[in-house]
Amino acid sequence: MTLEQYLGARHTPGTAASYGREIAIYLSNCPGASSACFADVAAYLGALRQRYRSAATLNRILCSLKAYYAYLVASGQRSDDPARSVYLRDQRSRDVQLQDLFTPQELEVLLQRKERYAALSYRNRVLMSLLVYQGLQPAEIAQIRTTDIDLDAGTIHTAGTATTSARTLPLKPNQVLLFFAYLQDVRPALQKGKATDIFMLGIRGHAMKAADISKHVLRLYGELFAPRRVSAETIRQSVIANLLKAGHPLHLVQKFAGHKYPSSTERYRQSAVITLQSAVAQYHPMQ
Image (cartoon, rainbow, N blue to C red; front, side):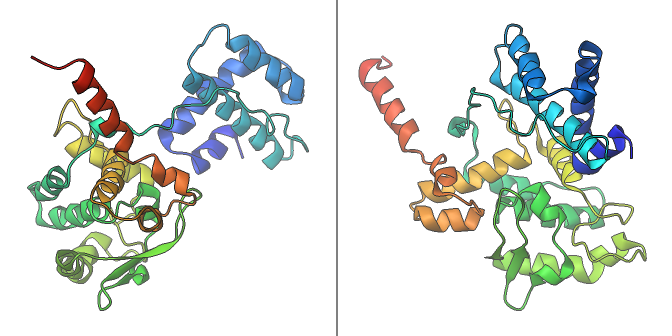
């Protein structure tokens, strides 16, 4: 197994390419990288602090190095991982940019896009409804199987991911009819005889991966509300923020979103933004 194959099997194409570039730079600057110790990795990152002030950039480089040494361990070239316990003091901002999110009415617009081909129109409406109504992540949508859909009960089950918990969510009434048509007629046409129980299929009958879903949203909807960017992430963030703004209890929104910790849901509260806006209005009124 090559490094490229290892990265490609564990990351999206974009992330794998980015990690590959950073690893190549690391190897060119540190010829003895394959036998480096913890202090060597920490010293390399310390030197980069003089060049890069962005915590996000440094974190990307560190993640690349962690991937490199994880590959060496997985391929039997090393028995220890010198980068595993290396962490940055810098904290990347986890603030949700609430001012860039979308209202429930704007999210509904995403479900009304016209398609040239009827089959793709149904598939895309099913996909977008899972983002707009259930607030699922692309990785969660990609692993849904036909057996996870219970139209009689009107529910959908997601197995969760490394960052979200497994949960069963209700479907909207209009989704039940939409999913029925997709499962009965549209999906078999897309499947083209291929043996798969993955729910979301591409035009050639292959299972849609998380990266495919993210790219699909950006390509078809990304500029719809410019300069705000429509992505699978901002749609999910909007759904969660709108539930809290509507007054739903924090613990119920946490369960709906699959957040493992209440603090993850707390980031979506509007109160801090409203307080800031009130202060601006009080001390800097627009005349």
